[in-house]
Image 1 (cartoon, rainbow, N blue to C red):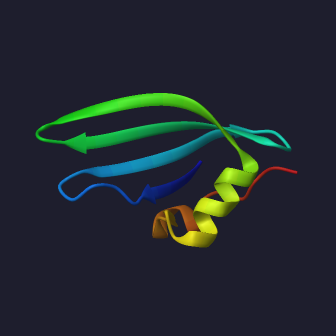
Image 2: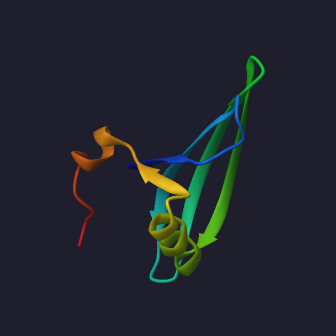
Length: 73
């Protein structure tokens, strides 16, 4: 599973896990920690949006995910 930190509002921390993916879509799990509680959401994300978020720094890969199990062929 690949994990990313999402750029978010000060005081909040949001992380995104990629659960599954197709050629043009990602299925993601978002967890936001704020004010002593957490909010979890499962959503879909177009691959083009994901690529844009990576390129602009909105999403940052977590160091542990770089060493994660490689994507299956």
